[in-house]
Image (cartoon, rainbow, N blue to C red; front, side, top):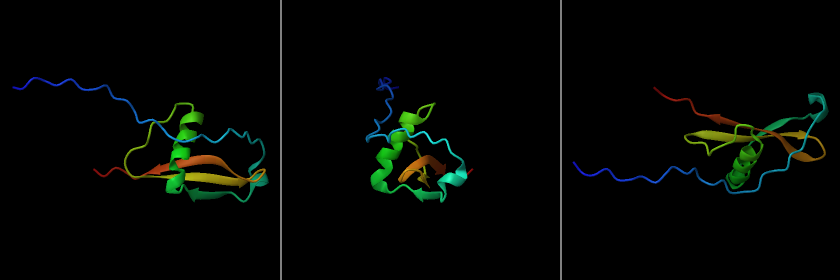
Length: 93
């Protein structure tokens, strides 16, 4: 049998982009209406990834498989994303 080759250690891809600054919002939902959910355009995906990695308490590694990222907007001092969401396709068995 051939000799087993050494593998390089796994290094996750570096996330490129600048994270959005933290903007604490401590108001009732009614105060930020209308709330809209919009898909993240391809040119903003690096910023979404960096923002998720920066602010998520468990960290974030680049998502894999079929998924869609979303910005959740509300009217608080201008049009600024309040939250982020991601939805992945279900696994087919």
